[in-house]
Length: 214
Image 1 (cartoon, helix red, strand yellow):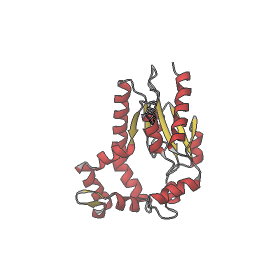
Image 2: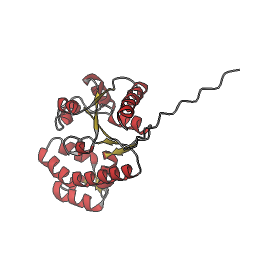
Image 3: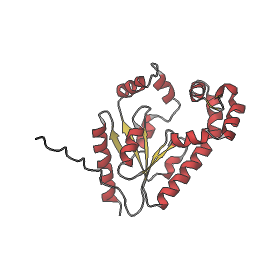
Image 4: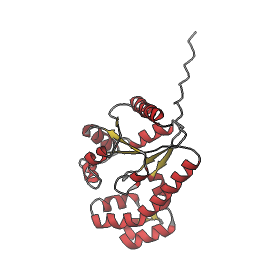
């Protein structure tokens, strides 16, 4: 008779007396969302800039403002055309700046409101923000985690998304250099392997913080 499968041990909850705010940075396709989910499994609030951006981008006033600034091709069926906007802003710096001027203040306000609510609940939080350094939200973090992933692995992940060769590098050129991101981080988390290895690394970081946080 086969033995019953062992029940997986749930991740140890992370709930220090004073909530801790972490930010995650790294290159494109470094696995920031996977890392954020691994932290969230320990009870940290996952504050996802992309989710806030989608909500902001669906607001009729925002759609109208983007159409006025970037033209009607930026909108399809009454919504922002993310593919068209992505193609436009990554080849036209002026268009990128115009779009960011519309979206980023609203996204920032939404994230900060969510962060305040998490801390009021006593929850620590993980800021999953692609431009954490560039938009200054890094200042809201107690610590920054840098995802260390080799270029070949990131290129492979980008190809799996259907990106053409060179697209990763083109998009990354619009962000802060990896050397700057790594220099701002207290923790370096390798993410060249599988999810199990990533979760072990996340647990190790939280163990260090438990020992350091009263």
